[in-house]
Image (cartoon, rainbow, N blue to C red; front, side, top):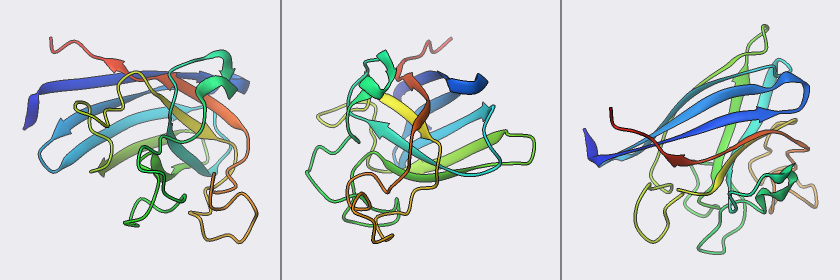
Length: 157
């Protein structure tokens, strides 16, 4: 059951015909993230909430990962991680990724709300902070930002 009926949506667009949508529904157990993104290279793609809802320079102006508690990058299963670290999504051989995640660090209301921020799909897999690369603890060494959308309130109708 949605808490207070709070729902949000991000319409994804980006390079090379990357497009889709991501819905967010806040529940007592966490926020349900569901969606579909097409135009991806088959395989794993990092999937994050970034701090800024700014796409004036495409996905590059969405800022760093949403990290209100100033932690290192990690897996969505880690206690110590950026709030915006949602791991990887998997694109099938047709380039389509179906998304279904529940996460308890990305509320749609309150002090750490993700409303007005951006969801970003990256070209490469997220190493979940464990890759040993110089970027592992900040970005998961996830590569270019190939698709993004601003998270906004969705009509309850």
